[in-house]
Length: 383
Ligand SMILES: Cc1cc2nc3c(=O)[nH]c(=O)nc-3n(C[C@H](O)[C@H](O)[C@H](O)COP(=O)(O)OP(=O)(O)OC[C@H]3O[C@@H](n4cnc5c(N)ncnc54)[C@H](O)[C@@H]3O)c2cc1C
Image (cartoon, rainbow, N blue to C red; front, side):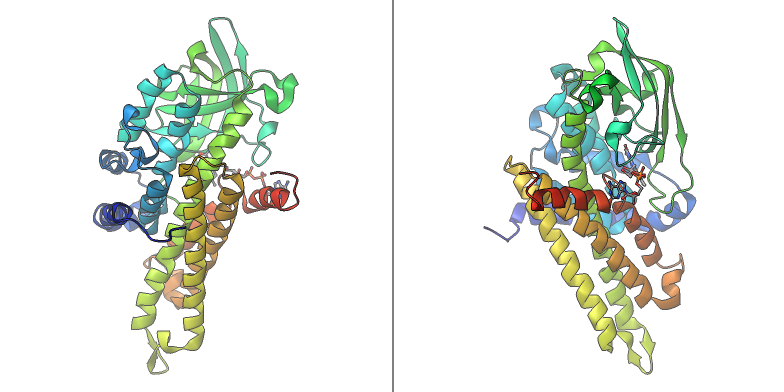
């Protein structure tokens, strides 16, 4: 067991932190207020190799692995949860699905472009009446001989309006229940019958595009199928093991941003003739934030380490995702308290972090769903 970060990991962490401080921090508050997404930031991260960590060199990646990737992803999310998301939308989600389930053509055509940010990616599972219960989705792809005819409505899709390539889940044989679900790599901008609409009413993550993707008699080439017909549910679950981990490390980043801001404030703000950081109750709040964020980070690192070793990590990922999401909400909530009325103001950075943190309790399976997964292992129903 080795708890020390290598020189290489420390260097990658520093590169990501410097990028976040120089390129994102100066614009993020104003952009969040204006709901502005800058694709050029995603491309710059791509050029720096941030998204290539989980991708082998053969397809344009660096192959440094999941642990290195979550270390960098956390640093970006510490400054902006919105710009932490592209790690997921580029390679941790679509890229790894294509790598595991795509044909050589899929891999060559899409993965290098997702690595550089030339293409933006998304994955579309959720529908208006199908969230946690993935198998209840209604989207349907019918085999028409030369093509698949896809109909369905996806909602709450990150990158919906900007994605070039989407991993889309739909039934090809509903009579087989979840074994009749399939996954497709769909060129969203080049397919007739695909429309998107932005969701403008989000609580947070305002620099990150989110929207609906509607398929109306969309003709999808036969070659878009990933794996075999009926592999979709399996592909989706394996994808979630990766995307949940990305979510967990972003939650750690947002959690870490809370004590970073609150410590500074506690050392400046005076009440009753003393810095508020000198009061035991504030110290207790800061200590809890510190301990829980550290613990969440260790859970994330362990799950990433197992991924790099090729060891199945479903339990470790759900454990990390659950704890990191809850920690992010608690830490940012405590930071808002420490800032007093300024915590309630959008002129200070902590309220944004609390709003963004709430997303981690929902995306990639809610906290309840993570507890269901964890308890199924604890009860011995899964191994
Ligand atoms: C910012 C954002 C980005 C997103 N990006 C994507 C994306 O890129 N792609 C995508 O496909 N989806 C995306 N989603 C959708 C997200 O994955 C779903 O919202 C999530 O899976 C929960 O589904 P739901 O909202 O329909 O809630 P529901 O499933 O309707 O759940 C409602 C409540 O019931 C609880 N619940 C449900 N079932 C159970 C149960 N069996 N036991 C106990 N409690 C239960 C839930 O925990 C929750 O509290 C995104 C969502 C957000 C907010």
